Length: 246
Image 1: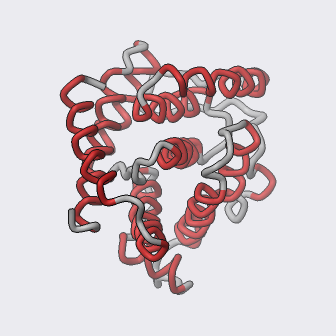
Image 2: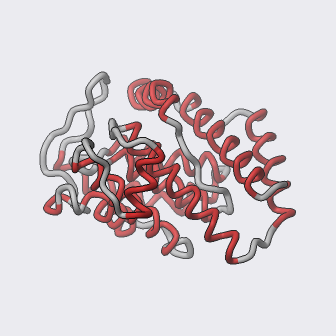
């Protein structure tokens, strides 16, 4: 990310840190607040038709929405479970096993046979020149990826590290489906571990978000993607500050 964005992030984070430590009730309310927003936005980016209010009703009240596809409901429920798991493993190192578990929790009600399992077929990304690796290379690439995590975490700013995790995962594209949502959950795991709030990529930024990923995958240019993630971090920090009345 560029210097201007980094400065904004550090200024906002400094203000939040002055309000810490938060009490248990505050932490639970913040967790639940961002759970709805992140579930809605992450699914909406992938074409889920539930609104934010409908997503809240599905995951908090367990009520189905008339006229909406069953798959959309299952995606909301699965994402909410994976989101809760992120909080369960905040004190653990990010590993291949944890990444597969994130996918399993999100995807198990949609396609249990492929939940948490690496794909065994070729996949293609519509609207992109990028071709994900052949299925026989996925396991090795995931092992190489996760072997780099500790060093990258030491080398990079926390926001750039979270963006790196996201981009690496969607580039390997290890699962038959749900790679983007797993990547965004993984990114938020890294951010939470670094004491940042959950970051939401709003559906209105879908085109810029996808284009920045394609630019990184096809041309090797990651600046646009890193800056977009940084801008979303800034918005989440501002929302966090608003909720804490800072």
